[in-house]
Amino acid sequence: MQQPVDASADDAVPVPAATPVTEHEMPAPLVFEEFVATRGPSLVRLARGLLRDPYLAEDVVQDVLGRALLQWHRVSAANDVDAYVRRMVVNACTSFFRRAARRERTTDSVLVLDTPSTDGAQNRAERDQLIALLRKLPAKQRAVLVLRHYEGLPDSEIAVLMKCSEVTVRSNAHRGLAKLRDMLTAVPAA
Image 1 (cartoon, rainbow, N blue to C red):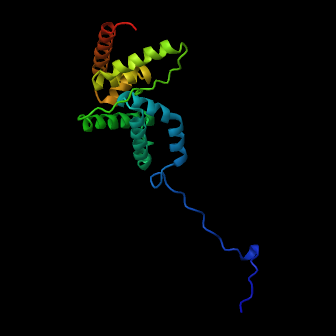
Image 2 (image 1 turned 90 degrees about the horizontal axis):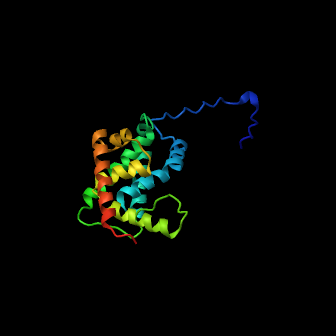
């Protein structure tokens, strides 16, 4: 029978210090979680503006964030992490349009703008009319207008996100706004 061992401080075996995990071996979950907490709603709003379907927008953003987490070491090394992930969202939305060109999947409440309504029914009616008109714009013009007016991005960032020149961004914005004006003048006041 063995005698119990009395371990005193003198007999202690040194335990090697834990080796730190490098950034490339494991993503920094806290930093990623902070990014999602602060930028997640804006990414969903961007996707809603581009896809016209709030449920699909949430799915696309969730997929994008899942891919971003798996590659967080590369994503977090980007000069502008927010722009990098926004570009991922724009690309995912564009891919969806390419795949879903066969059928449009919309609902009556497709684009939920996060601007609070102070005048109630009148503001709601105007917002619904604007949403319906935005749906009719070509994808690039709609994307530029959503990024510029709802996300508040400058033309230079929009150009990077859409992989085009600033002139193309301004051209798409001009054409999109012109089409919106034409459609607004063609619609009788309610």
